[in-house]
Length: 243
Image (cartoon, rainbow, N blue to C red):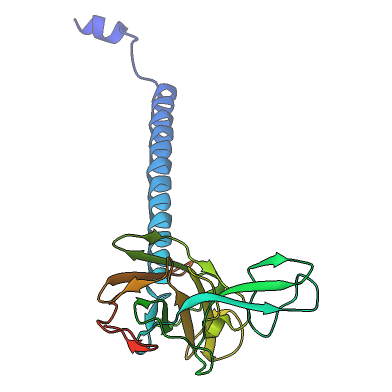
């Protein structure tokens, strides 16, 4: 039996051990790389989510002061001009004309807040005016990239038209439009720290009747939106605070 043991040449050489050990090391290295790479990817995504959340939280706006509603009549003004068909009489913006030969023109408008031009619509609340400013965080908001939506029980307009007519900042605009004015701060398109902007919105479809609820949503390109939920007063005047 001892003779058989001494004559048995089967064994585990050092070369074979090295090969097996190398295989284990390679497999472990590959597995470790996969695990680390997945961890790095997850960490990077978590970092992006955190940064995006911080940007969203610090790039929001809020109301500054009272929301004002106006019962301004919407109608047409007729006048004659002696120029080209692109001419404008005074500050009224022409929407159509009947005959380019005599230049008789018609303008659709909301009378703006000048005592000589406003006309009361005691039935409909037609224009809403409010002021906005930045919340804590003070990341600037691009006012020219705002999206303003309107909703009531019968109507939803997801993106009201920005109005750049003459005196639009005072309400000289057609239905379903909005305009902004920096009332405190510089004259660029950014709402920055310690600045305020006035937003004026002409409600679509002749506005809302007395005691009717509506919502105006102001949505910046980046950051949280604000929803202004108000109700038209029981008795509508040229200017009323809304609650």
